[in-house]
Length: 458
Image (cartoon, rainbow, N blue to C red; front, side, top):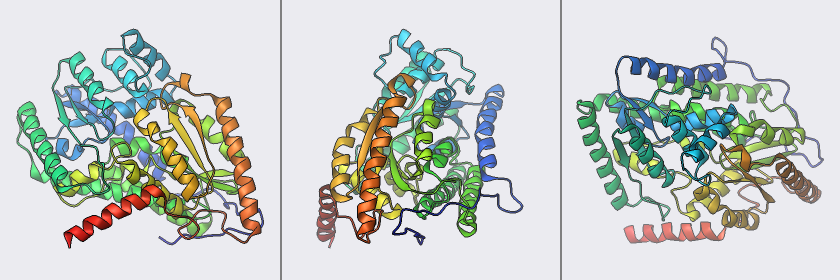
């Protein structure tokens, strides 16, 4: 995709001419997708009433397998995020702590465990499970979280183990192992459901998942345009859709409409981001759902658009065949080596053009946050951008300070302003690209490993 650049040598930036409009003859993509999540949960409740099986499913479980058995799936992570966003997460976190769970574990897990134990919430009602589907490509904490759900309800747990990827490429040995995990999960589900694996349903689910992923990633990629037809916060608002419905044809169509709307916005000069783009930044981590507006407003007021996010495209699984599927599901932000993580983010920064980064040190997600100090160092050295961080939490509002956040954002803006003025005075691009940045130490290491493997193969 060609990147449209309108960077000027003076400090004036173009502004969108208006808000985007729907594609002629179609409803707004936002409406299609917002209705979809409600429909997914309504469908699950109706299935429960008919006596059909309901699975509570981790967000990066290979759901295509479950669809081969006609199992209705709902997602505790999405449910917890919605509960937190609607300001009921803290109450459920405290309830889980009263049950004996430490307040140092993931906020999603605490909300989910309290709900599983019968603590009600009107934020989003989710039917209780008949089985749980778990995998650890997100983090190893998922295993204990879902074991506890299975214990509370005395139900089966189907577990798919994804080994940590300590190399850039997923080895054939690991793929063999994961395909074996898929086969064992299929055997378990055949026993639980009393049905045989339906290859036709599985193939259809895979086709839909790939179609959805392609449209979702295409929509994400429009952030690279300058000015951008969207803000990264728009993608955060669609996370529920890509998590809960990636094997649903309605999601595929909804994301295709979304990408078409962004394309139309570029032609018409419109954007969901209505301020001049004074700066473009990368936002690292899962948002603080209880305070999403508090994250957005200080950036909006200063004309700082989020033009690169890590969280959203991480759900774009694309593959051809079962072995590529195993490799694709291995590539989650917390399941890859730091070299891979740095390269992924650095290339996103170069492709999208940013001049700063804002990092959420998410107390709920320690595997993610633990690698960030080294990643920050790599970005500063190779991308030559300022990086600031703040303390936050995806679900527990006690771990986020609005005043600290505002102070950190203000500091980032001051550094970016100084850097912008210096670069523009020299006739240089304000933003990162593939020509004005260096390859980091960790990227060099990853490239050398890949080159060595290619030589061995030859």
